[in-house]
Image (cartoon, one colour):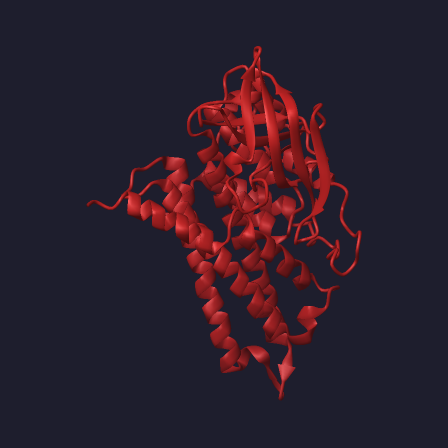
Length: 376
C-alpha cells in the first residue's frame, strides 16, 4: 500500500502546522480539581486563523469556496490539531461538510459556503441518549403537515451552546435513519450543561416536538454511516497527534532528567517502554491511513470500509491510553503536576479513547462484520 500523500494533502498539513504552531496546550484545569473551571466557548481566534488559512473548507467542494479534498487531508490536519489539544470543533464541522456535500439536497448545500468561511459552526450529536445506546435510536423524526417533528434526546453534544447548528441522527416510523441540521435555539430544544472528561463544555440536548423543515433534513441512504465513520476516523487522527506529542514530551524529559548520574533515557527499562510506545504509535498511524484511504477512495475490499475504521479505533483507543500512561510513569511525580501540560494530554487521551465507543465496542462491531462477510 502506497501511503505517499499528494501535494495538496501535504500542503494542507503544512498550513495546519503553521496555524497550530502558536497554540499552547489548553491551560484550562480539570474541573475535577478546580470546580467550574470550564471554558465558555471554543477558541474563536484560532477558528478565524483556520478560516483564513482555508482549512475550514478543506473538504468543501471548490464550487462552494472550498478545496474539495477528502478524509486523508482532513486527518492530516486533525493530527496537527491533536498535537496541541486545539479547542475547536474542526472535526465536527468538517464531518458535517462531508455529509452535506455527499448526501444533502441541492437546496441545503448553500450552507457549505459560509461553513468554509468559518461563519457557520456545526457540531454533531453522536453519543446517543446515554452514551451507551445507538445514537440512531435516541430521537424520532416524523413527517407532519409538510415538515418534520423530532422528539428524543442526545447526550454529550460538544459545544452545543455556542454552535450555529447541531447535526443529529433520528429514526423514522418506517425504521430509516435520517439526519437533522438544527439551530440549538430552535423552539422545543433544551440544553442542559455537561462537562467532558477533558474539561470541555458539552450539553444534554432534549427535543420536544421540534419542527424541522425539509431543507433541514438529510434523508439519503448512508448519510449516518458516512458521518459516523468520518467522526471515528477523525478521532483516531486526533489521538495519533496527541500520542506523538506526549511521546515527544517524554523523550525530552527522560533525555534531560538524570538518575544515579545518568539520563533516564539510557536505562534499559526506560528504553524498552519507549520502544513499545513507538510501536503503538506506528500501528495507530498505519491503521489510520488505511481507514482514511478506504473512506476517500471507496476502494473495494473483503470487508466494508467500516471494518478498517473499527481497526483504526481499536488501535487508537488502546494505543493512546498506553502512550499517556507510560508518559505519566516515566515523568514520575512531575507527571502528576496539574500545572504541567502532560496532565491535560492525559485527560484528553481518556476522552478520545472513549469517544464514539471504546476499543471493546469496536472489537464487537468488527466481529459482527467478519461474521456477516465470511463465506459459509
